[in-house]
Image (cartoon, rainbow, N blue to C red):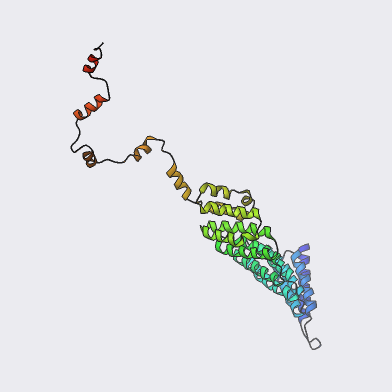
Length: 341
């Protein structure tokens, strides 16, 4: 009953708004300000009545009316409220479109911070459904705050974008994004964050099996981070560069890496361990069973036997004297020493 009453009230407010927009002989211009207020009130009534589609349409119309009066902040706020309704309606693509329009209006009003926060909020809403559109919103948020020269805020958006790229498996794009993030941290004088991001970049290079690029990244960015994070990155590179599988496992199990963001910590599962160490280990492993020992005995063919023993095969008579010489003494020898007992 209450919902029906609110819906009826909203309909009346829409009719009032339309009257404010009409012109006549005595009214040459539409009254956009009054119309916008009526549309906003109508949207509230429809929202209470759970008629979200009507509420969203009223907010769009209110925003258009505010734009006619150059009230850009109010126009953007109407779209901001519409984004909340779009989330409930699960219209993810529409959220992206409206977020860009609202951002533009906030910028025209001179509120870049509010514009960036709106983009960030909208990107989080659609990240699980439209990750590519979310990345565009994050990138625009970075550009908006950098117009005002705010690298620390831009680094926050770059972090979210980099994490999403890693989740999507776009490691090369993630490396480029995280490189931008490190530049923002350097500009914002935040060396601790540089080292943390450097470790992630090294992990991404190793996941792409590019040890050389990992080493170059350490050379390029290592001087800007703190010693602890730099040591973690160097341990990773040293283990994989020397193809030491055990050292690589120890480096990947470092507590610093395990306590990073979940998407970054998961990289340890996809980084392929070096194979060189296991081959060396097998080669150096001592032979402990008979089959291994037999495998090491070289094959001898008949030609080798002929060369060694002067041609022809050896008979039992040839072997017997040698056996006697190394075995029990002859009877003649025993008689000379005292005879047989």
